[in-house]
Image (cartoon, rainbow, N blue to C red; front, side, top):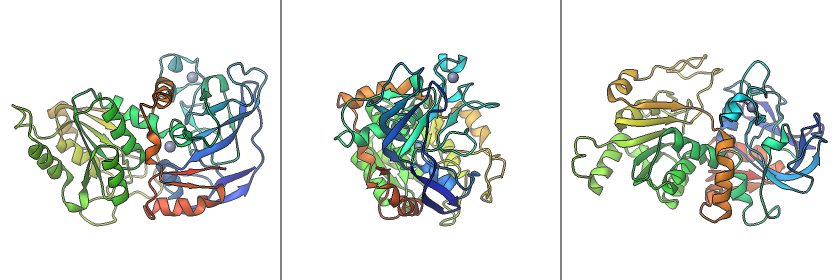
Length: 390
Ligand SMILES: [Zn+2]
Ligand SMILES: [Zn+2]
């Protein structure tokens, strides 16, 4: 089968690799019809998080079951399925508690696993013609329709991006009427903003510096904030003032909830193009109101092969802990627990309530992957979200 393979820093190639096959009775093999490229793939592409040459990339697949192992009961060949990024067994104590990102059976000696992801288990990636799905009864989420129909882009985003965006709003304890600032208008940030609006947030600000991404933020109903025009915290405070604060809120011109959808490869504002992994958390510590909430959904890796001046190879970071303590801000992290949300969000797509596919800007074949990775990495050619159709 053909697959997108990590070659070395800033290079992926499309190669023939051995076909995905059934290895355990509970596996299925799916024929991938759509497979999205994620910002997380770029952390590996940039040579930061320890991907080994030869790794098949990709963790956001939609497809059709091609073959099912003899123990699989819930799906059969021909079923259209979306496969959540994080592999889980469905029955260990963490899965039973709905904490499927910390499944105890999918990565020997660790917890949680994902497809095509350095340090997250042995599962090959989904930017390929075929994908082996272990624990298929738990991991296959059935969807109706036919490959290539009008829902293809909405459904492929159920694998990771929409679910992770929704999870960010859960971490931020978002409720109707709240104000929220999302830093980062990549797909996760945009779909976190979109989820916040679906939940009835009163005001949603999205901070970024790429015009096409800010345009998307506006398109989904958020207020775009371009940090090239100045301190985004000051900009949001002014925007809130201009809109008119609720009576009594004058002393508290920040937001109820902040979402960091950037992670460790954030750019600082002092020097153009220089990373500062502290920038976003520092800004949100200033911006979030006393007793508010901070959700960190952007990736902070345990290993950074080429840390920025403010970072460390082992992932340590200096954060304004005292500010969070004195303001009483809750800070929550973590990968999405797909099992909790995927079916709910699928049904919102099927009912027409949610159309996350609005963030998709580019499509290509597997052979287009090297060019799409390059453009996405450089935030060039308007690539916000690219979906490969093998
Ligand atoms: Zn992803
Ligand atoms: Zn489990």
